[in-house]
Image (cartoon, rainbow, N blue to C red; front, side, top):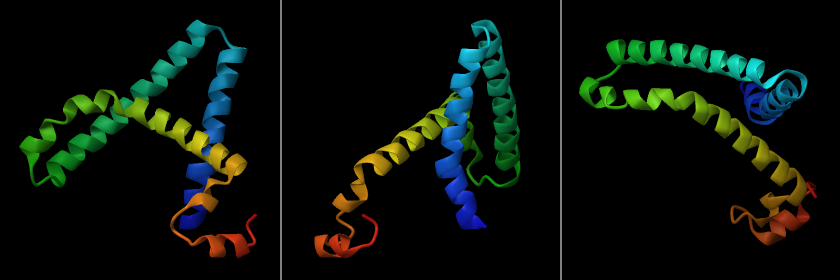
Length: 117
């Protein structure tokens, strides 16, 4: 289940997120789309803040250091969206250019004999 979850969240989910976002901009007026995206941003920001405060109170061993990272909470939902788009671009690049063959993790004679051409 862990492997399926990883494949879903790293390969399928970025396609769904980008497709849905583009569909929103295509189908609805810009004001509606921006208000919807802002509402989603606020939801993620609130959930992230609750999780941050919970971890700060119950888990953190360096509360003062962790408090200095509060300003990052505002940009973190944007970072998550951009990392999904980055994952999508990397996946498409891998499908098209097969860059795994240029990896230094396996010698050329191993990648040449592989069945993944």
